[in-house]
Image (cartoon, rainbow, N blue to C red):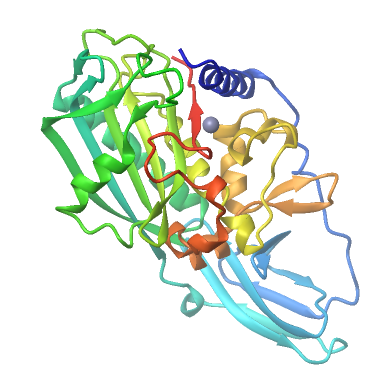
Length: 373
Ligand SMILES: [Zn+2]
């Protein structure tokens, strides 16, 4: 039994329980920008839009105006509804005293950035001490459909700045080997050996330019048989990992025979957040992180959100989490997602401590997360 591992698991589990039930007032709805008569850029469209300047949310919706100092800016808008999409323009302010007007039209809508995803599932698992579990193909299908729904949510929250291209690899005959609590004390192994599974997959699929791999395997059989060490509330884990000389996000979801029949559906966006939350700050985008929390995915409560899943993550993706202390909006935002998919973030920006150790299935940066049954 690995004590450290259990502590981090318990903490993560506790955080999620707290985030799910503690009710806090969300106060960023009432913030208004002061009216400034010196505003020098008027921005309009026939379809509204949420304004971003150089990728930063500024809490204004179109039509609006803003004051910008001399310089060149990326002015962009996120649009929902019939004309949903991400629209951007480059604007140069030469004379600050002169009023300029720009109008967004359909021609300003960008093609979504393609994020490449590999979905991998196993219907049979065996722990290193020989315990086996299995589920029918039907459970994999249900989980996959939930996975697609959650990816769509991320896409919608990015204002379609991104679009997922999904490749699937379902192993219905092969058995995946799972580390378990019977592993030696000094081996922090937990769940799958990602390196081993990925090298088998690489023989069939070239994943060099992929952004995300999502694994799914049965921690319980559908008749509730379970192996020692994998309880019904065993959650999921994720990390940014090396993929050749690039970064790839890896997420792992065990099938759990819980009330959802597959896994906690909210786990998918949560774990995806763990795969990207370390990358964007390296490109200058400021993410909300509670000083006492490990990471952005666990920080909703500190920013006044009642839940991470329903309220906080959409705002992180939209870049509109208000930091009262810093008097600014934090988050990834559609511009960052459109410019950089996980695969575009240089591996050299990560230190060896912040990326998985190549030969080990357990990594210093990996988040092991518990979810409610
Ligand atoms: Zn987590």
